[in-house]
Length: 242
Image (tube, rainbow, N blue to C red; front, side, top):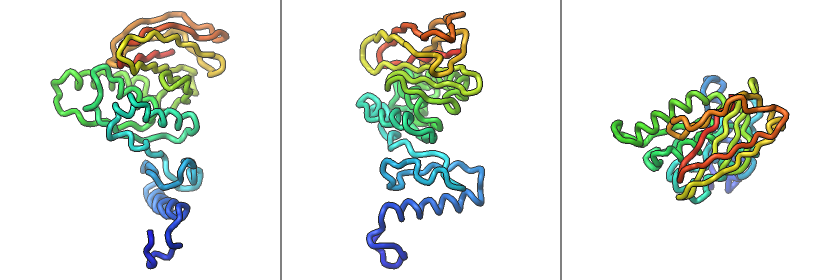
């Protein structure tokens, strides 16, 4: 801003810009303390934690504009910045995605649901379409494991394998993804004691909530967790550890 009537330096620097936005956030929070506020791009560059620990602060950060072309951003790896963000910050991300660009395997839905703790969806109008039914089934599964995805600890094994662990129970969710057009054999290998995992069974489920396999009495908490899965093209597989 170059206005001489606004009582700031000319031109306004980034810190002043961020502080002015933060002042608005604080004023709203003081009056409505239970409202959730997402801090959009305030020009703070890589210091996305800036001012988050102050009184009456924001609750979430923005999802780096990955809502416009979410599938393209995922296939091109542009969306990997959300994965990298989760390695650095525990501040939740908010993102609203257009499910019209997803496939019927719900690849897009599950990848973004894993990296954005506050996820919004839209874009599907035909309630009789196969994709709409697939999304409904995916949401049934999402609600089942939502508390782990949104309140658990995120561990990035790699951009295509995400681990979420519930801090209270030690149960977990592993999400594995295949961005290729061919079947992909994946060896899941996780040091369970390192992540304080505690479980007895592993339930393997597709992105549309179809049961794939159940591994019972699998886990010795002192050993490495290791199993192999084959992920269909452009698909996720969800492993529920409980």
